[in-house]
Length: 419
Image (cartoon, rainbow, N blue to C red; front, side, top):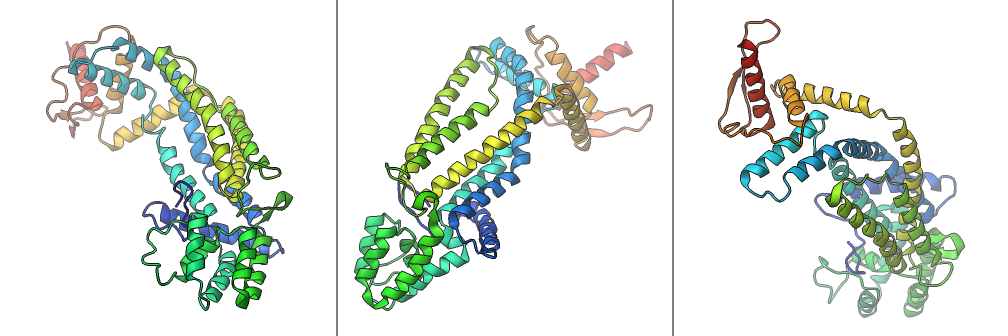
């Protein structure tokens, strides 16, 4: 768990992210084992492959999100007109009408307003759990963890408590949940401390405990070999402000800026939308800079993960942009409307009435609509005719819902036709 520079490297046990991190950890461990079969034991390369693999798994959700964004750009003019129509009106009646007409716009295009959030709700836990795994590789990759445990086991036979307690403070290792460590530090938590060791720290540890110097040297050399990265960097070290380490934060900033530039930007639709776009622009400028500064003080392994993720998403966005150019927005709307009809049928709602209502409410959005004062205040039992059948079906509509109001419109239309 990361908190202002503090870190806990045992496997994350959160109720939501914990199980996701465990699965991702198994994937990372499998990648390491597969590479080791070819004599490649490099944590940096594992991070890159792992990041690409996991990001590839969530491509379908990213495509779904951008389809929703493209459809939103088509709906936005009508939604903007609804907002403009009721601007400054805070009374209950106006708020209900505004909500009703907004729902009608979404219904007209067969769109669920929450569908744009669904991909984010699915992918966000994966991304956060992925970060947990990258930050705690020894806790998830068995072969790497074993090297640290070899040293921790050797330390248990030494008078290590004072020295390692000082290292907790020096390395800013978070000890929340460790219990009482005044007399003993568990082997697992010794690994947490050792996982933060840089090259100089290993040399100091060897000097401090000469009796187990060979065990420390043998295992630490393997650890540093596994953690070695391009240009002689160690993924457990921080990049700092000098070459070649400083190039990683700079690369993180550049890659994120490129990714932002490739993302589709919404068209301007009134003052509120312009203000939102301005806020997004400020955020898109600030976040890459913030990421670069954060990358300087975090381990290089985290920076490798960030840069790898940006590179993947740049390639992904280029491909998605080409794909979205070929997407027919009219066919997309038709499919959405058809899916909405099937969904309404399963719920026992007359899809034709709902769609008819939506089209009526959005046909001339600027005109004042008639108040539906009593719609949805009580449950309605509705008898629907089905293609000449004399059978009747009772449908209970949710009070105040769009389906209830759509049914009223349908009844009103039928009544006029009968007359």
